Amino acid sequence: MEAHSSEVFVIGLTVFFLACIIGYYVVWSVTPALHSPLMGVTNAISSVIIVGAILAAGPQGFDTSKIFGLIGVVLASVNIFGGFLVTYRMLSMFKKKTKKTKETE
Amino acid sequence: MSSNMVAILYLISALLFIFALRGLSHPESSRMGNIFGVIGMIIAVFTTLMFKSVLSYYEIGAAILIGGAIGSFIALRIEMTALPQLVAAFHSLVGLAAVFVAAAAFYDPVAFSIGKVGSIKTASLVEMSIGTFIGAITFSGSVLAFGKLQGTISGKPIVFKFQHLINAVIFLLIIFLIILFVINQSPTIFWTIVIVSILLGFLVVIPIGGADMPVVVSMLNSYSGWAACGIGFTLSNNLLIITGALVGASGAILSYIMSKGMNRSIINVVLGGFGGEQDTSASKDNSDKIVKQGNAEDAAYIMKNADSVIIVPGYGMAVAQAQHALREMGDILKKEGIEVRYAIHPVAGRMPGHMNVLLAEANVPYEEVLELDEINHDFPMTEVSFVIGANDVTNPAAKTDESSPIFGMPILDVEKSQSVLFVKRSMATGYSGVDNELFYRDNTTMLFGDAKKMCEDIVKSLSA
Image (tube, rainbow over all chains, first blue to last red; front, side, top):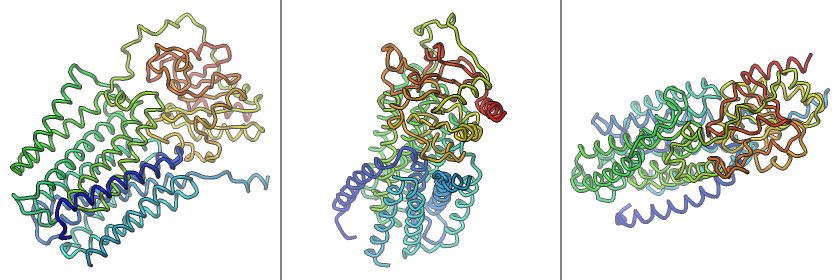
């Protein structure tokens, strides 16, 4: 943590580019039929920004920064719950052919 | 908790997010993927709550409960046809949250260990203002996209003189403001950056028309990721950087796929103004050509006597909520021993994968739903193509007419099947404003009416 600030930035940049490359390959492997759920999931996980909001809302007492933090927590929570739930709803609809009903006929 | 422990837990959380996306490579593994995502988020939130500086558990808990209740309520109540609006609305919240986090960091830099008020590190200021800028654009752009998708604002592209020049000037102004902000760290300038960025977000989306929305929604998805990245750099938080990059890459790839589905560059879509009625004079006058009209009974008769039917759904199906009636029609045909499949064009609907979700909602097994590349070579062997609420994506002019605005766009070759049934409300042109010559062919039968009503009538005729 005591690293020089430019060093921290370079580490961040390294992580950033490697993550972009992982994202590139992972997303291309997503089947086009699931592109809507993909937007739902990415929407939910991008709300990991809640981490920053919690840090801002963390200290005791009330100041401007804390209020902003709490608003951030509310907004990000809407997305996290909403994003994951709507994705769950979408994914639970994707079903295989039900072969059993055909056999019983 | 030691900082190493925190870093490891954040790493686990980031890996789980990667698995969440990886799971979407197949419907079978996708549900597990979503659960990975949830676990990753829980780890991220609880790890952060364990920080020494985080003490106000009640307030944070209450904020999570309020947000969570609102989010859950909306997600459980929303109609699947309104999905594109919902996603746009959610994107706007990510953008806004990014702005608030950046503002919080600016007002209390000590809490984020990026310096003291009035003497925040230069690098942090740059990262903070870039995060704010992207967040604010995501916010206002998504709000406008939401309005257009919901129908509150006209879906028509709004173009005016010097539009792009104005946007460029505003962009330069923002860069200038950021430099000023880094130098004097004034709150006034911070909020000016926010306001001007919000304005730019509106202006960027305003010229883009309704059917180009899949690209816009994907692009805003991408922006929301980059905004998270910007905040991640500000806080030197690898989890935010990784997640932001994943989301950013995802949105960018989706935008690319969507633009390619229309044979247009992303730049061309972003510059906007496409579709609308500006070049009707250029299109040939087809008023004297004969159109063969049919009714539900004709359609039922044609399909009943076929061996294979390919259904091509488009945005019109979503508008009419016709997916359930359509599936019922497909079921009856299948019982008659007819092969029924669905062909999905990449840009059908208002968001990537929109049609797939609607068909899944109507209980169509996903094996019967095929992408353009998978099914296009089957049209010549198919007896009936049943086009419902789609138009431009079947227009052969995209292959033959070089002067057509949609020339070069990949289309579904319905013209190669023995006969084509078109369910449409009227003879009106599609989004591109181009007439479809397919309507006038001998083997085409037009079925005018509401898509849902038409499917229900066909079902009645089939079961009679």
